[in-house]
Length: 332
Image 1 (tube, rainbow, N blue to C red):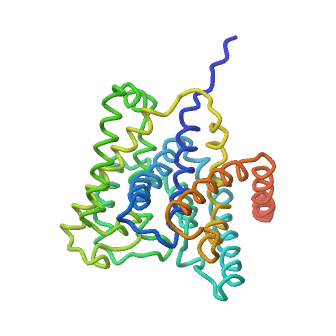
Image 2 (image 1 turned 90 degrees about the vertical axis):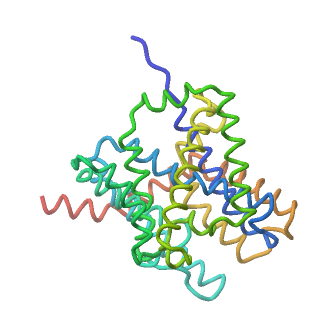
């Protein structure tokens, strides 16, 4: 019996995405951070693909829609509630006031709420013949609606497209991307980098558009301007995603295990981000803060991907879900 070797491509992609996320979050906490600087260019580039990439990969692995729906509360809603309350409590201790709540999402926790909504609805959405065109339409129209951070409404409407694209993708689509000539891929990366630097340097559109958390009007944009910028963001993501998928190694690497444990890294790095935000931990700025952010990212990736940490997180989730599980069994 021949056992197929595991394809570590997606583990490696997720490891790259989470490393980029942590680094970008810490990089921005430098007291001298500005968008029109090398750090700012890196930050802009990273935010051109990280969240879209996470949602696309998540959608790709949502083939079992019934399982996705049945585990959504345990895997996403309960952690969202727990860590929102925890972060709010930490904020009270550090700065004397809570930051964010369960209704107005804060920091990176909105991702958990969005994933809960996507996992709950993907079973129903998958039955709609024109779900992909509808998701594209929603992506562009969401900015026309009076949505904001309330229950991550704006972000859910925008990022739903990438989740559905991932859900619709097949292995052959990734194989086709990986078959693209490497020299062309590197050239594409150079073009995307130059385009990103130009967008930031010339201030062609508000950086906040990348966050997709509010309307075009709140950014001082007309609907046509908002649609055009949304299209540019879409092109940037697809370009960067093709580069990442094409250049990412398929075999096991030293960071493959990190890609299997992105959830603990994602949630636990928020505390370090708070530390950088409200203490001098980020450093004095400049190259020093850049190096501090880089080294801290490496430590976070190693520490929060350790097996004991991962097991402890899963145990916590199991304990939180136990009352619901018992209630469900009792009703049966």
